Image (cartoon, rainbow, N blue to C red):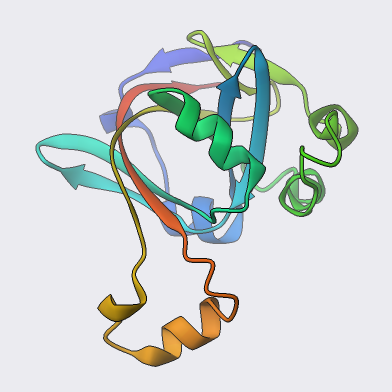
Length: 168
């Protein structure tokens, strides 16, 4: 079944379930190649008068290079049906395993000219608006810094406008 373009405002989505429990794939393109990573941190909402998504990527993640290369990236959701595959894609680096997507069992499919996955149920095409690195001095509670960043590898936060939405 092919993706159909839809209005993001009419999409049915439970963001806490989709992101935190079922996970998502953040996908970027670089030099004709696609790379993706699993994420369970992020959000959707409205900022600066735009529908936006916020994602977080650690600096050492290979996918960060792909997201940084272009103005856009995609976020794909899977209805909780592909946890094994998403687990693999979250633990395996495309730097060490260049065909990790093929090995995961998922299949790249274009949604409006942007890389996503045949098995996805919803896709958001996101245009970067802002990024910044999480700063340890800005934590109100030092426990969060200690718990989530023992290696001091602070996430880069990307705020991106949702410019297209697709679903099956």
